[in-house]
Length: 560
Ligand code: NOJ
Image (tube, rainbow, N blue to C red):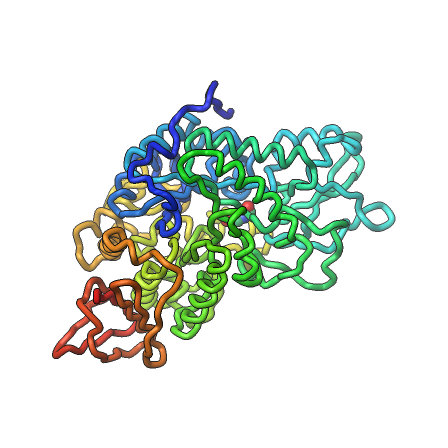
């Protein structure tokens, strides 16, 4: 059963203290994955009440905004990215009253709230889709999705050669109401996620209305899921042997279902709505495009406000590669006037403490634990580098604890649909979705009173918020200090450029207003003249006689 409020509650973004124009341009935005953050009702699954109770942690951490992954009514075929009702909360996460309370409390603490919007596809349990199936061929509701007859003598072959991002064909055949095999429908992801037909005016109208519903609830913005996928090329042409396409390994410019120019008209219309509301409401695109220049198209002045920088996320821990992606990202955003964004982890990729624990250039999803000490050292250094860059940064829950990915989850507890569609060869996203630890001991390390929907490793207690609080060497205190410094020195996230200084191979040195950031990505210490007064470092930085030894995989911030 889903829950609705009779009338949307009040409470707008203007309630958030400290409001100023353009808050998002240098904001640090923390991603909460609701099922794994905190469990308020003890059913083993995180929920909105759990998030609300833990807001003080986020306030103390020093982030500006919270992005919540989907909490809408959903059969959970893809952890909520399969939405059955866009205006209702799934009972496992709570009610609309809980959402209202969460938004109000967050605003009271000076935190903005960004919700996930999933416009590329619905759940196969969405009322439109269920009725389209029930009413059979000829139903007008079928035009809101992509239904097509199959190829072959009896229509037994899919209408084209597109493959699902999660593996297997991107088409599933329906059964007509009389029991005979019928048309096929398109799903770029799981079969439970049929793609909307964005050429149909009812789809566009519906999403404009959904935007307004959540804006009226007081949210400060939207993270737009698969923002690059809404419009498909006319006639749904074959790809012709381009091979399996991957969400997380996208270099597929020119594919007929991604990054089509038509998507931009949709975002222009959305921008008009966002601008109608007081309080600087924003939207951030999840757009996997072949280049950052293509990504910049999503954040032109009359479109969305930010786009995730996946080129940055997929760059290895190597100075030259990092410098290049930083330069290219800043240069791409400058002409459109949008802030660059930076991200190291999210709910779709292996946590960066584990990605950096292996050889450079490894995959974005892995089951290899690597060298944990090395991974954490690099992760801490990478975080300080990211937070010294101009623009907005995204954090993923648990990275402030230095959590590694859980690489040894038994197959039988895995829930990622892509794991099953790829025959266990891919789809390891559950490893970064394990509920996070709050306390040293206790049921599910303080996640909740009723266990945890994915098993937590034994080391989780020592990595908990409780265990790390007050320990000056902990990763949690490093994040708190870094975010405090960023707040006290607004120049750190501002602007659109960094000034590079000469540095040995494997080392990055750049200046920001009043600051110098030094990064050693090599495995040996580097000695150089101190550039200023040490402010913060990811590992101890000994200085003597005006010189410093920057250790392996270490970042230091200096005031000048
Ligand atoms: C991107 C989301 O981040 C991912 O978790 C989801 O599986 C796909 N979009 C499909 O909605």
